[in-house]
Length: 159
Image (tube, rainbow, N blue to C red; front, side):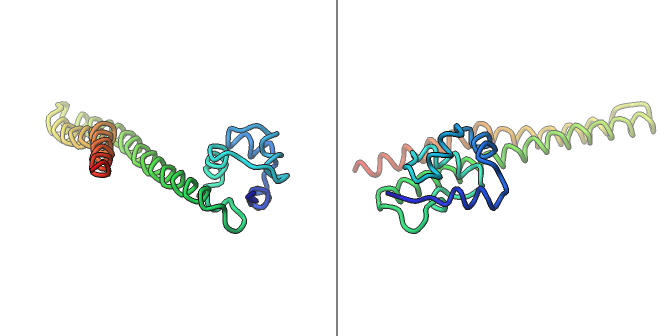
């Protein structure tokens, strides 16, 4: 039976059990049970680890059973991939907002100086093309590449 550092981490952040439950999207009773020494599912541990911003393996006091360690490491790897993907999507949305603001500034400047939309349209078009390229990579190509990698690994392991 494994012990967890959840109460220690929660108190270090000065969170109540209710706050942790809300952030991790689990019930307060679940948090209470885990803190009282009951076993937790890996899915629950993943949600709590995500709330704390740590790896699942960091929640264990001492060493977990070998099977639990392997499963926890797999979940940690999956969470790392998810965090990386979310960060790249967030970066895209920040770029989109910057593009909109820059476009408005360029159009306003262009209109105030020459009352025609010639040079600003060219610059905005180039910026739009770069933004579309980034969006395609993040939202379309990366998914297909990840699927291809998984399929390739599966095929190689079957041989």
